[in-house]
Length: 532
Image (cartoon, rainbow, N blue to C red):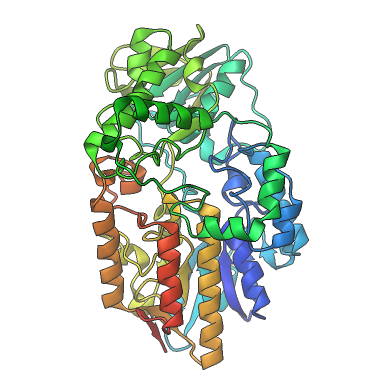
């Protein structure tokens, strides 16, 4: 059987894969997309757990490349829930007729670069092979579910669920004793919903997280109309901002104002219900521990006010790391959930899990009988989805070997030794520290312009120069080390995965500054890339 040859293979049909298909098709390329799910959506296809929703305002957490699309789509909530985000991506697929180039329920197992032909051989799990000149990996930042290796994990007799791989059919918690392990973002969104149905909910928490009230609501029609009326201006502001959202950059240190003024500002930001409101109230909260303490203490005081039982309040209060250095969460009624008599918090710092049994979870202090167990234990972030693909580049060297001591890339998009392979919002780009959709659009537009340049100039291969790759990777780490982030064990540092190299994964230089740097490189003929 002959192997089909295409211009480009795109892996993933979420925000990144759909836009990559649209842009590359616009260049006249023959594109094949592979998607493991049965339809489009990517992360929002899989993440169907109760309470799943975006924590960036929906009007900004959506495509901006098409003015009509942006103006016509109406979001029902400030922070849209998973079903609505999925409907939006389905609408985009319909609007631009994208499904005809997508193979669903098809998982890519390996990618091999062939030096004599300069093409990639892409093999799926069912044995189908396609050769492609270009490969675009739109596999997502948080798509490789982390299931911790707890003794007895496979012994539990009841249903076991993971928030990142939730069933497509509704899950009924009525009358059940449910256990949730994990209190990161997915746990904080899930727990209040489960508590409303379950007979009893036991939450197993290792590290409490900072969470802020979302104050979710129906968008104000006048506000939305104003944004849409000046859409080009708003889009430019978002694309050149630090985080990919509308934000007035702070100009003062938290230590330059009085305590009264500072607390008043924090209260105002708390009431706004935004992810970055408090964190961006002052310009040194991620760099100066003393300044950060003022924000952290403010949030800790709010937690104590919201939780009735003093011990539970203390157990839910984060300590020992700086506010913001683990991704803060937005919640709806999370802390108040622990005021219910049928909800119990187990502090695993004090009484760690010894094993999971057939009938529940046993800690060093007690055994908790359960009918259902939910793992809200997050993801092998950023590198996990890429390394799962078994990618082998020039000279037979695998990406896993190249990244054995941590990811190395140029701009988070190209890796030395892996020609014509592009990682959308890969490690070393703003990615996880930004509005992902804005960063996805920037990467897809930049790489598609690069491909157009290659074709126009008769070049066939492009890859990162090793020296430029090292300089960029060192710059990413230096920028991270100038902040408080590396002092915290977080998934930003890969610390949630045993054995994972401890490096700062995203680039903290800001969305706008990063975009300007990339645009400058393109204008100068792409220095740092080898075009052959």
